Image (cartoon, rainbow, N blue to C red):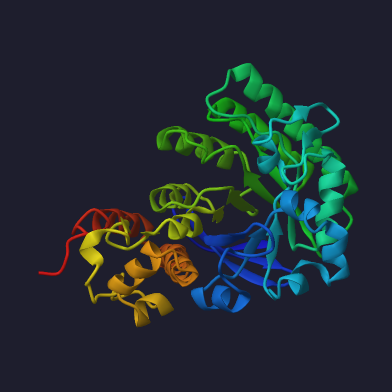
Length: 370
């Protein structure tokens, strides 16, 4: 399912093959929570360079329900996206609802209407098979960090047992089921979890429970411990990670795939991501600035609109502003992983990552025109 095509020490480039096409890795998936990436349609996604998107099982099983999605042609036809789709299991969203956790699964109150809902590892597989994604994720138990080691270890072992149950009930030949590695930032637990999940035989692996506020150094050690125990010929997906430094750190250690709401959420708050640093488009300095966000950015936003106009849209809360900034931020993020991929193929990833970091701190992107 995943084939390595190049490598620069630990960093690696490859191709992830799915029923709806190939995805070049390292790759980034825009998050389409309710079968939509907020403010964008499928044409926008194709134009910014997205090859694969993520949809959220928790939200879709409650609204409109997986049977409705299936009746309307499954996720690809439902959201008019012909490329690959990955669905998460819903465990991360349920975690925020303070669920009751048992060996059987999770019990929680719906955030929509307060009804009591149960979700087992078997349910998560069934729902995702009904939704029709190309890649489904097993249900895992997430714990907040920091947590006592005993709590992290208990959740890690339960996640491994749930993974075995999920694997046994998965039936769709055109859908891959990925296991999930847990263990917090404890290197020993990460290694134990990775070995246990790898033994099940999954074609790919998610690294869960990170990118939740831990220190980057702790996250990097946890990733390295997990990667050392995972098969080298299978894809590694760091769940929820999407900032520039975090992705560069993970790619340098052997990560292949990412998702995160960060680029789209920041856009809705008026923050733009650029090669020379991130800044708020709301600042007064931009009111009469005729420059694009980034003159070297190929996106529609930078080709056609000035900082002054984009500031006006954001200050007046026009929906067009959300769309245009989202287009730009996703173009930046997808361009970053594409450039990383090319650097790996040229055996120059370390130099590339160093250059990216140096450029983003100097010069200052917030300096107004003189």
